Amino acid sequence: MKGWIENQIQQLVGYVESMNRFGHEYDNGFNILVIWMLVIGFAIFTLVKIVSYRAIQDEYDRTTVGYELKRQKLGEALMGFSLGSAYAMTLVEFHTGHERSLWGRVGVRLLVILGITLASWRGIRFVLALRQEK
Image (tube, rainbow, N blue to C red; front, side, top):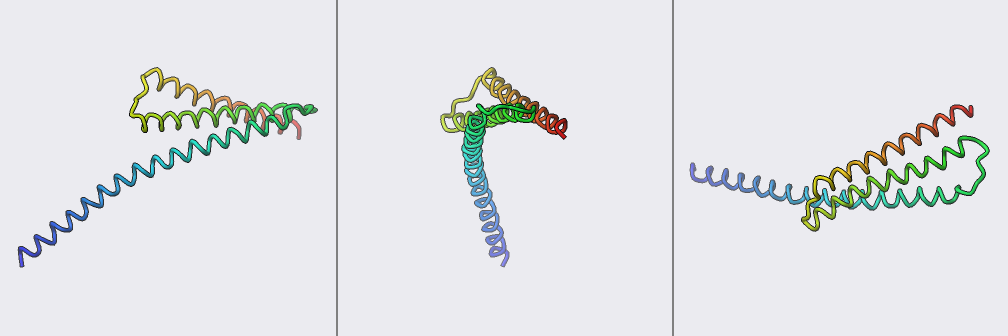
């Protein structure tokens, strides 16, 4: 009886270990899928912002709201491009096994910081213009 219980415990431990290995492998694949979706999503987001900017680019701005809306579209496009680029560079690093240098990593971070800051600044200016119109 004691041998049978030990055998069952060993089988259970083996099962738990195999589930852990499967979980780690699945988790890595899922992370890569999420990063691919972020790259594609930010690329589409950036394209939509650029196309919408181009559609209103030649319109005459009678108010500051129209003027700020155009600039907000460009800021959002830059933010989408910078975030998409950061994720794309992560994919390149993963698939090629090439690690960026310190300055490469700093450059990517600065691009993201610049994109988010500019988009935020343009968004705030747009909201302020809306408030002044009221």
